[in-house]
Amino acid sequence: MLRVHFTAGDLARTRIADGPDQLWEILLSVQQLGEQRPDPVLRGGDAPHGRQALRAMAPLMPPRGYFPDFLTPVASLGAGLEEGIDAVLSTPRRRLRAELARMAEDTVLPSWTRRIADGEPQVLHGLGRALRHHHTTALVPAWRQISERVQGDRRRRVLAQCAGGTEAMLRTFGNGLSWQPPYLVADYPIDRELRLEGRGLVLVPSYFCRGMPVTLADPDLPPVLVYPAQAHRSPNDTLPGNDLGLLLGHTRAAVLRTLVEESTTTELARRAGVSVSSASEHAGVLRGAGLVTSTQHGNRVRHSLTALGAALLDSNPA
Image (cartoon, rainbow, N blue to C red):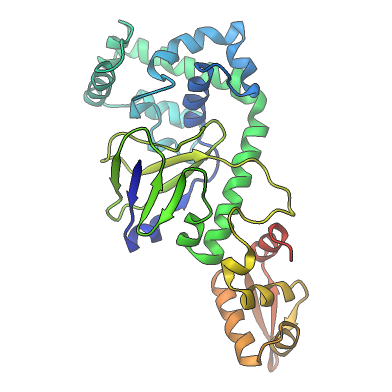
């Protein structure tokens, strides 16, 4: 079991990554190719022209157990493939040695990995070429499918966070990942405590992550938790584990739904069945969450949905 310890400051600094992280997807897809039933989209990675790159990476990315943190640098989050590979190749030699020595405690590594530990440029650049080649042959043909799943999952989490705060977003997880304040508890192969200590957490939805989440082994690195992105849901599906009324409160959800048509505060109160003062209060809370915009017209205030509010209603129809 993994327990991630949150403080109030950590909740304020927790976010969802902007999209799929290419180095995490490379690593996790290589791990899948070492299993009996890899995802069907990985046909290119197991083709003859992709096997050489796979042989160069697979010893460092075993399907089970420890793998070096330097393969998935935090600097790659939100950056492009080349920036991520540059970060891998720029890993300090002392860290290369320490992480590969740790891996060698439980895994028999090929002799050439010693040259990586020594920071030999030729071998490091060979690793960079293997990362690029696997990305090109195995991931690029399926990148649209990978990105759609990850972005769909991210959209639901962000909507929940905008509407109800970080704790509401953390409650949207399931399948081995649960919010038990002040801990995020995950199924994990070992017992581990990850203390954020004000640094916050970056949650990274991943197409190739299976079963349980993955985090960096070094607790001193910026905290990252990679989790399986849920498959695409249609616009008629609700946020995972939530009804809009449970997320916002039933009255506030009703107020939001009435704003599919722009309304004055008085009209909003009448349509939602609440008092004018209550309608004004609810509109103010929704405005603060970025779901509603309000503009003054003479002595009246008119309220309408923002794009985020409309998207939330699209994913949670009445």
